[in-house]
Image (cartoon, rainbow, N blue to C red):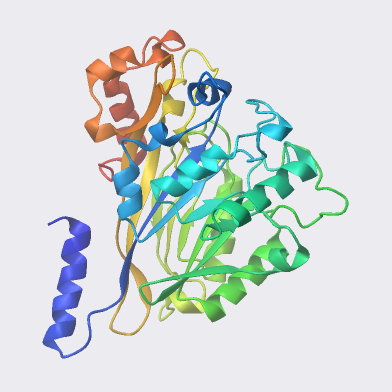
Length: 375
């Protein structure tokens, strides 16, 4: 029995012994950036021009779909073929990446990224329409089709637990929101963030904030991340899972600094995953540091409602991931690092850009950033 199941089992046993009902619990996972560089898109298209990205999730689908709540950071806009499929620096993905995300078992897609406006108003409108028409069950956060949507806080309910999910980006690469859609992207605006957190405190059992923040390729924590973490914590956020740096960053549990505070009263404990790195990418980078971009993480958290009625983190960890790329059709897949081998690493095409890439180098990176808190 793993640590998550053991904790939940012990709480359930206590509840049954005392005559109470088994407490609500849910498992939550989140992965980092779906970063569709041109070689990834080329791997997904067949000779007839049809796209399918399911192969990317072939080694991780079970972990994603088994979770009660699965979140993903969709780094690039999903504007469809009509806007032209493109990679860096102005990305646009075909709708089929959304089909693959849904098929893999994701429940929530985060769209507030620095690339959200790469295709302007059409990109935003097409993305929202795609989700609404094709997969209305998917909760889409960070991108808005109206002021009403921007003002709303998304709350999902699983196993009797109400979870608020907030998603913001630090910027959009200098591209302004469309003049008639100033509400298009949720930004790290302090007044909005505080207002959303207050609503979440009053209407949800647990709050997850997914900020697009930090410094690209930095394995540490920058001053802006520290500032926003304190704003989130003070506003009552319970869990923060960050994206954008394209490399993994530390995980930190910050304890309540006010005696007697509960998580549902603001300023309580908060668990922070500063960056999950890339889930999938095929960077054009070369030399030292390139390997870092191929390693990502899957945050794994179990929430339970304790005897007092408060929803808390019962267990947490991170599963290390590595993006395996080879030339040719469907030549990209994301593996749990625990299942990766030196033989696979030797065939990873990223070695053409960084000859030092090895499985052990990926392991050493995880040890350096996460210590022993990964599997």
